[in-house]
Amino acid sequence: MAYNSLIRNAVVMGAAVFTALPALADSNSSSFDVTVQVASTCSISASNMTFSGITTGTTSNTDATSSITVNCSTGTPYTIALGNGNNYSGGRRMTNGTTNINYYLYSDSGRSTQWNTITTQAGTGSGSDQSYTVYGRIPSGQSVLYTGAYTDTVIATVTY
Image (cartoon, rainbow, N blue to C red; front, side, top):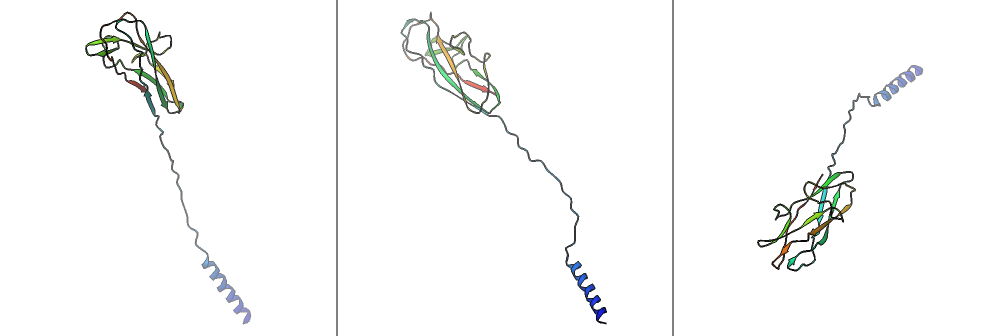
C-alpha cells in the first residue's frame, strides 16, 4: 500500500503544481501614429533711413541706405515688398506740411532697380538673420523752398 500511497501523493502534488501556474490569456494589439505639423515662420525688422541734410534750392542726387533683416524657418521661400509710403502721390515723397521732396528706393547699389510692392526681393529662409540693404535716393532737380524736417513712413512686408 505504501506504493499506492506514494503514487496517489505524486498525482495530488502534480495537480497542485498545475493549478498554481497562471492561466494564459489571449491578446490583441493596435498601433497609432504620432504626428505634428511644423509651421513656417518669418520675422522682419528695418532700420530707419536718414538722408544727409540738404539746403533750400535745387537738389542734387542725395543718397542714403537702411537695412532690412528677415529671419525665416530653414527652407521657407519668401519675398520682401516695400510699401509706397504714407505720402505717395504718383511716387514716394517725404512731406513737411504741404511741401514735398520726392525720393526713390532701390534694391541695388547702382540704384537702377526700384524696390516697391511689385518689384520685390526673394529669398529662402536659413533659420538665421538675413540682411538686405535698401538704397535710397533724393533725385536731383527738385526745388526745395522751405526748411524743416521732411518725413515719410514705408512698411516693409515679408510674405512666406
